[in-house]
Length: 163
Length: 284
Image (cartoon, rainbow over all chains, first blue to last red; front, side, top):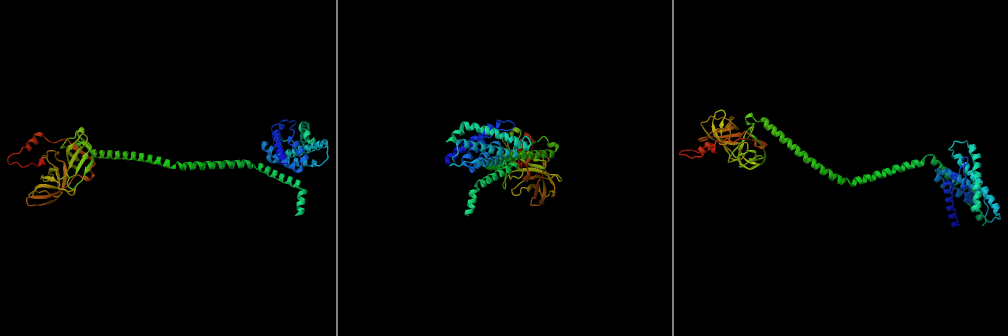
């Protein structure tokens, strides 16, 4: 268990670094895919709401340290992880891999949208309309994040979930 | 208690998210209040304060060294000041003696008294001019106030002077008013009192009369003030006359040295003993 937590924390660190230094540069219509949301979706579904919340808090803190807005990213990660925890599948569940994957997609989308919303409320460097930022750009960011989750599923998560 | 625990277990996720959200809000609030900048500024202040204290400590450590250096510098400056002040005083004294010197004495040599010996009967002066500066034995030593003494020995750069207040010194004098001649001597004791010998009781010498050097002298130029009569007491054959020297020997700084006043022929004649010849006054 402790080993798993350590591995997850390490992955979280890598994900945060990749998000800040890599994915955040892949912008389209002022939005970018959220790798942290993908991680939160996966961890919340498999480990539960508390884990999602905790990882969201830590991930937000790491991203915040790297970007400069620590508190806001912590809040976004925490709420995203908490919301993603709603899609948790108990360990003794008999859900199929595809069901689990759907839950993960749902959790990822929820985490991405909530996180984006929190960030959109707190940060508005371009002076865009809040509604536009929350609804339009939030949905776009969620879509990009789902695409990232799909790619991740194909490359990494598929094997993990099937286990 | 059990209920509380059950509630905690049931809503732990909400409690956790509330707690973490609260922390996030607090951090956000701190960030918006620019607390990190303030912390950074406070850090700079602290760093500056510590650096200043460390510098101050280093300053204290070097204080002794600096103090020693300043003491040495102070000593050097004090020495320079003393030298400069002494030179200035000498210059002023020299100017004073030249200003007070009568025109007739302007060609005299000026010398500074650099040493003197005191005793009950024998006082000697040493001046900083010698043979190289044209000083010769038996030259008259004087100040604008009057006779000081005579040169008794000369080296290359120094000359020794026997002053009036020496028991071996004698000079013939004549009173300015009554033209009474006598011989001034000093028998020790007070430096401001000398005797005038060989004054006959028939003399009209009076108290307060000025005594001058005579033409009889083998060394002194005539007409120099020697002193002033302070008391005349008649004796059996001669009066006992006291005089106050014209020169204050306690304040001698610079003196003048007059050119030699001896004529070899006169000295030769005076030194040749003859029948019935008494010892001349000027030989003494």
